[in-house]
Length: 487
Image (tube, rainbow, N blue to C red; front, top):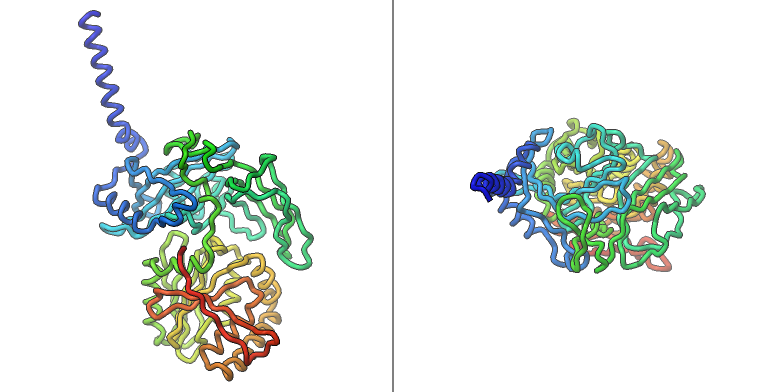
């Protein structure tokens, strides 16, 4: 070989080595990304290890962060996010394109929040616009996007689920399109009946395998349409992928999601369909710093002459609001779906949730202003020294209850009369606080809601249930308290 040719080949080979060594930097430069400072990256690793559950990992597998591929990005609302790619899975239906990442929110030299976010495109190439999707993942509009954005904690427990159509977040309560995963279940079931007058609707399964295996997890696109009466008119599940233990369906790298299989694969999209119970969600609030800070501020505000509150936004921020002086109410005006609402009750007023509080949850539901009803939280701190949160345990049952009790003013008046009558009797028998708790549990016994009581520091939550022995009378009614734990 001639020296000149050898020199040229050496130069080409050297350039290839340089490009290969700098591929990460080149990719970041092309997409306007930045490498995170080392102190920020280490803070994220520490935060992740502090919050990930070993028990959950044993049950469902732990999603692996690809720390070496981390980058930072500025969102459209000028917040810095640290993006960590995660392992992907094979998707059989090519009309769907899915990517998932860990997204950490720095707070100075520490991490304020961390979560898993999945981007699901339907007839939309997520890969091509992933930077735009990440920068706007908490916004009400994303140019051109049709699909879903799902948010989970680092243990893959659901936090929020948003559907988009042609760039706009869908808030129509009568049309829901979601991305879901669940363990194998024979495709022979009817849709949830929302009210007694509704006609049952069979779920239509599209492109599902003939052999549904109970040990496998099935990812699908779910569309539910209801009419103005709250009745389901259509319910369709379109198959996307199947993930089975040790089957080789497995997980690939942080790129295309084509997958190569593994004896210990990362969890499937959707986290394997594991949904935290309301009690587990309540327990998780004990380590939620923004929630703790907001509830503590409210506890210290119950001696004011106006109600105070916080709106729990889907981007994990808490927006403070206040009511009018000398009025025992607070007006909650929201223009986009929220994760929850916290507020105070003043001196001389209800030491627990009022009837108007329950009605407000229903109004948010009807107006499409609840981001995910399965994780929605309403909280109250009162001048009586009590603290409670309320969770929706059965969305279908709550829809039926809300329609029956809050559709008209006459219905609400009747609900209030029943509530006040129960308060009067129970308080005479059990005292003010216990009497109000029993009265609320009594009027909500068919509402699909669960009530939780917190201690003074909000470091413990207990679910309250009303025991009604048979034969039953109000004298014999007692309250049981069940400690809530995350696992």
